[in-house]
Length: 476
Image 1 (cartoon, rainbow, N blue to C red):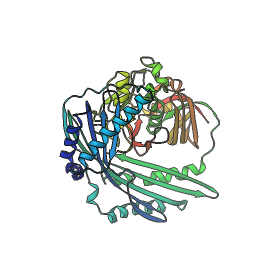
Image 2: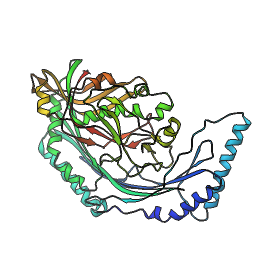
Image 3: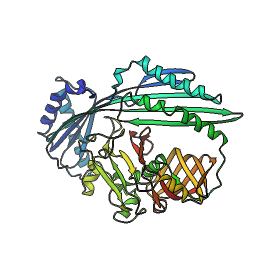
Image 4: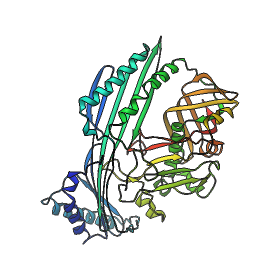
């Protein structure tokens, strides 16, 4: 079923066009982004239920002008015929005051080129199987309650369960002299979270679900309840790992975490401009095994960070970052691309209309290969199959990486022994880790249940994933 357009944005479209037209008399470039994002979060736990507005909800506008030297941005959450002239005068006044202060203090601002835009009109309404509004809050909470009850019924060791579903409808409008764009789509995510206890030992397991989907995501969650309970109970018997360097197989989730941390942040090209990314030194050079091809883009796959255009009105793309081990390029917003003399990659994203656009990841993933998982396991004399993760960190300046993995399954002489180690810390130097990749499976899976920050702030939705990969890694 088609996702509806935003009446809020539709009702103000002509006013926004008029605003852009008036300001073009004084500025060589003017654009405006309108956002209308709304959603609901439904949660059921062992001890209660809740329904709240999604934290991603927002409604407002960000106006960008270029005065021939650099950009200025202004955000506001309402516009009508009476406030239009006031907005125009405020923009002109503040730009003039800033430039006057620069001259008075004998300062010179860095010059940012004006983007070259092509004519583009677009109206895009995505489709989902079940629109969120087709199920009442009572029906959704009932489904989540059933999942909770099913988890408790599977074992007396289950002491707490949390089931959650969040639906978010994103509607955005972008207008400039050459562009008139609209998009509306829905992304959803769900969680199954199970806590188990045996004696004094308490462990938990979690499974996330996500995609450009509606309430049909509840059906997917129902299929995994037994697996999540099984994993939570399994971790009660987990042992600590002996630190060392091992042959490992990373699940698609863990591979996605590596992609995100290793060559996600590290190739955000605003970091190239600020000289905070080591990746710029390796463009055109081998940074990974020849088996490794890595992408980032909103157009290559369908997940929570897929869209038709970004928050700067640039068309979504599928960017090949690493091609058979060679680092080709990074991902950029309009400003970093202008400064570096490259084409924007459609990665300009804002946390909200009140925040700046940065070069940000969308869907970051390794391409699948030709190997079978069973063959990969058989090839290992001693090592671990690493599955699920808790967190990750990266250092784009020095290319260090740290991933906290939920658990590892021991492999001895090509077979899983049943021994579990947890948690597992993976650390290392990015090129060393990626150059060690020796097998890549045919499987492919993405996950988009998390959010990514830029320096512990500026959070946006992203996804990551890929196939199973075999590598050599330092674990502890």
